[in-house]
Length: 177
Image 1 (cartoon, rainbow, N blue to C red):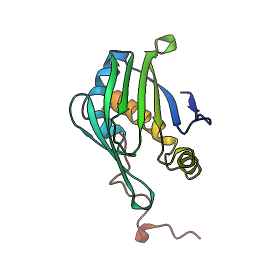
Image 2 (image 1 turned 180 degrees about the vertical axis):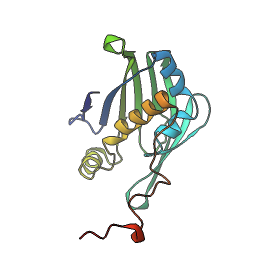
Image 3 (image 1 turned 90 degrees about the vertical axis):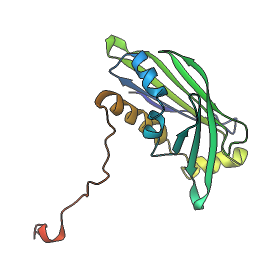
Image 4 (image 1 turned 120 degrees about the vertical axis):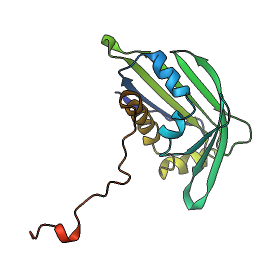
C-alpha cells in the first residue's frame, strides 16, 4: 500500500488520499462499498452515517469543543468495478466530496483501491490552517477506513478492541519490581 497526503496550498480545500490492495475482484468490492451497511461500519471511527436511500446518506461528526457538524451526500457517479464518487449536498456544515477508484492490482493480486476525500473546512484558508494545525481532520481517517474495508471484505468482520480489556488484574500482577 502506498500512502500519500495531498493538500493544495493555493485553495482552502483539504485533500486526503490513500491506497490499498484488496485480494478480491473489483466488481465484488464495488457492490460491497455500495451496500447500505458498509459505510456506517467502515467510517464509524470518524462519523455516524445514516443511509437515506440508495444514493444519499446523512453524515454526523462530533468536532472539538462540543461542536457538531452534519451534511448529506449523494452518489454522483457509479461505474461498476471502476469508480464511485459522491458529493455533499447544498447546505451542509462542511462541503466535501469523495471518490473510490478501483483498478486491477499488478500481478493479479486483486484490486487496488484509491480513496480520496476533499473537504472545505469552515472558515476558508484560516479554517484550513486550523484544521491541519490541530489535526481536526486526521490523516488517518482515510487510511483507517480503507483498512477496515479490507478487513470486512477479506474476513467478513472489522477487528475491534471493544470488550477486550487490556492489562492484568491487580491481584494477578507479577510482584516483580
